[in-house]
Image (cartoon, rainbow, N blue to C red; front, side):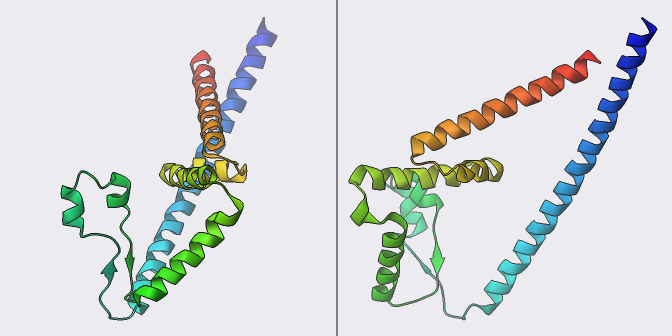
Length: 170
């Protein structure tokens, strides 16, 4: 019986050491993340400082008009882009070129194009860990991306519950 007690004490000690290392790694990762956020903020400020003094142009309708219109989807209202003033024909050509590179409409059906847009918007609303995990698996459709997301969250839930069960059993 004493051997079992010693074995359990050793396991508890190892688990405690593991938990301490885990916490330390977590703090290091949080510090790295905060450092990256500060660097991104600095870069954004540098870019803003280098932009020309020309006034920006809002793409789309005026925000006040959009807020009052029930016909404008929330997604459109929430993602206003501010771009430097350029000629309309140049902007249209750039947008069309980017669309053709991103979607490749000659190679896809209407449904595939719609699914690519849904997939992009779906990924956009996810947290960064989940988004990265899904992108690494290169989903072929928005449905597959949703299945990946469910698998990720399910695995995370079961992992957390096993940690909780393990801590409670000590």
